[in-house]
Image 1 (cartoon, rainbow, N blue to C red):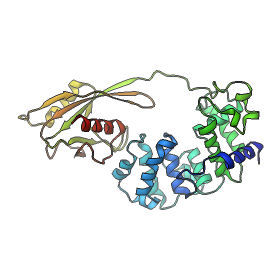
Image 2 (tube, rainbow, N blue to C red):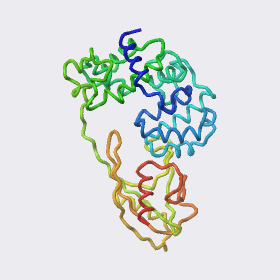
Image 3 (tube, one colour):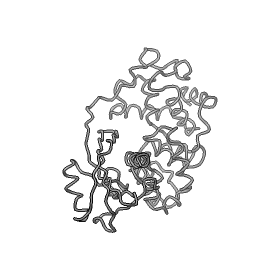
Image 4 (cartoon, one colour):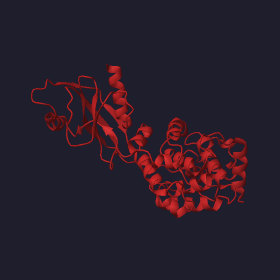
Length: 341
């Protein structure tokens, strides 16, 4: 076993995290947790994870569920393609996740690192991971000269991770590396004095912990403005339409929207009967950050009687506190409507 792994595992046995709710519970639970943690911090993910597993305790339970139910239990976590891929994969694998690395990587939403985590921490087999925390540890320790997200740097870091991961206890090693990145080798103010890898760490020895890993080249983040129709009926329910399964917020319920106020008014005026008394009111803007742009949503509250058939799209009249699958900014807006009332 490589000395790097020996030191890492010794540290893990004494100082690592051993009480996370998904540890030691098999490949299904490992898979769900890994998908959640792809874009979510551990402390944020835990309550969502516990709620999700309580509702879908097995692959069969997840496969047999309605997609709307899965999305509702994912609501608030963002990156909803992850939930759709979980559901799709559960229906494909027939009750058991494969052990073979290539077979795992062929499934929707499972990449190389997630497949390695399922093998190592789920199946108890040899598996290699390279998530964000592990990249940071290895980039600092090796002095990686480029941004770890670039193709050349990733190739080097994968080769390094494979050379360091032991055949024995690779699941513990994977968890140990994630723990090191999450608790000691953090983005800012790493605690090098407590790190088991400090003696031969390039970043520590050369005073480069603040500059490594090399940051991603900056790009200007554009802002997109969208106007939302918040149609409320005489029962104070809100009209929402289900978005197509593909694309942004696929399968979730959202208000009708347009690129401009004029377009929104022109597009939605036909929804109401000619005799309807319509009261328009601008609500405070809703801002939401995506990985590649910022959303500036401008809600327009409209009070008018509901109709049975609005237009040819799946839709629903919901109370603001309904348990329905909505993206985070829409959920936030519905909460604000409750406070507004």
